[in-house]
Amino acid sequence: MQSRKVIVVGAGNAALCAALAAREQGAEVLVLERAPKPLRGGNTAFTAGAMRVAYDGVEDLRRLMPDLTDEEIARTDFGAYPAESFLDDLARVTEYRTDPDLAALLVEQSMPTLRWMAGKGVRFVPIYGRQAFKVDGRFTFWGGLTVEASGGGPGLVEALTRAAEREGVRVEYGARAVSLLHDSGGVHGVTIRQNGQIRDERADAVVLASGGFQANTEMRTKYLGPAWDLAKVRGTKFNTGDGIRMALEAGASPVGNWSGCHAVGWELNAPEFGDLSVGDHFQKHSYPWGIMVNADGRRFVDEGADFRNYTYAKYGRRILEQPGHFAWQVFDQQVSHLLRDEYRIRQVTKVTAPTLEELARKLDGVDVEGFLAELAAYNAAVGTDTPFNPNVRDGRRTHGLTVDKTNWANRIEQGPFEAYAVTCGITFTFGGVRINTGAEVLDTDLSPIPGLYAAGELVGGIFYFNYPGGSGLTNGSVFGRIAGTGAGAHGA
Image (cartoon, rainbow, N blue to C red; front, side, top):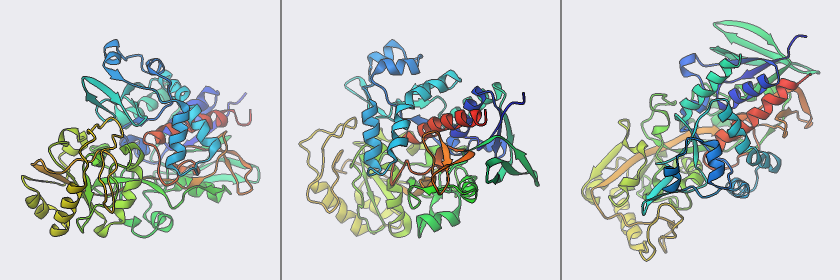
């Protein structure tokens, strides 16, 4: 009997999880990667590899990370992140618009999916350094984010690709899917452009996992709005919305936050698209320990509103809204040791000065008097009765400002001072195609399109306005696995 054939469009985390799951169903699997092999992996290759997962305690983590030593456990407070907390965080940051069925499935399947990935050869490790600070001799994890893939995003792509090839998945590079082969009976394959040639590749089912439209300037401006053509793209230049377009052409229902996206503070002079040699180090995520000012010298967000995990994905938009579409992050010596590694790379727009007056004159594009007045008002408003603690929402705040800082507020007063210039870096878009809990793509009558599945960033309805850090990769893995399982069994 001839085996079923599945085509997976994309070669990042969601796509490779789909390919592996389809192989488990006995299907022949072809992965189409638009990029050449050195640039494979989509946005996954540009991430730090953090994956949000529900767990009830350290024993759950130990099963996922068997390399955890007794010594590490003894000096670390891993806490717990039960499913209820994950779901609450997802609902809260999306302003309760997330699809409840998809959200519940994402949370419920987070740990089983990561353990399945570990069984395929992905190694997970604790996120020391970025998600845990040492206080009184112990590391304490915060923000519900504890686990990352070893080697970050590139390591995750490498491990999943190796597993796929080992299990007989065929991967073709430089192979761009341009349209779906479809009729009234559903989807029957893909039209591919490769090496200047067009060909049709037929299959029993297709999984679309080729990312959002963040690298498509025209679509960004059309759907996200004015000035989004000026944003830097954090990741791959190949995520131009092809999968979404192909699905809509085949009758798929669009859903979700089409005017929304994941966007962060990003190195001002970073290139137009991501650079794999730098990876995610253009990001600048230590703003909760300092302040951010715009061209007028004014603060414009509550830098300490929450752990950066719950604010960084929306603050890029706020930076883009500022005059000149930039901001400066300012720190003093009280907190400089807390800055993440990304602040120490060579490709950084940084100024330092022994006094605030000298620093103000070095902040390119910023009104000097406005900045000094803002800083004076800020310093005067900081309450110092509550001790500073970076591991918890410490309640150390300002009072009486137009924009108060509600946690981790320290006076900016101990030189030398440091400042870093940032703009908006877009990660991925939130609008996409509608799926059910089987990862089947639904048509505009909300019925499944036979033979068409989707996972990852091109699925809409899960993230709105914002997202909890680390949930993007987990989302791709969970629904990639579900999509691949369904596609692999389709027509059986």
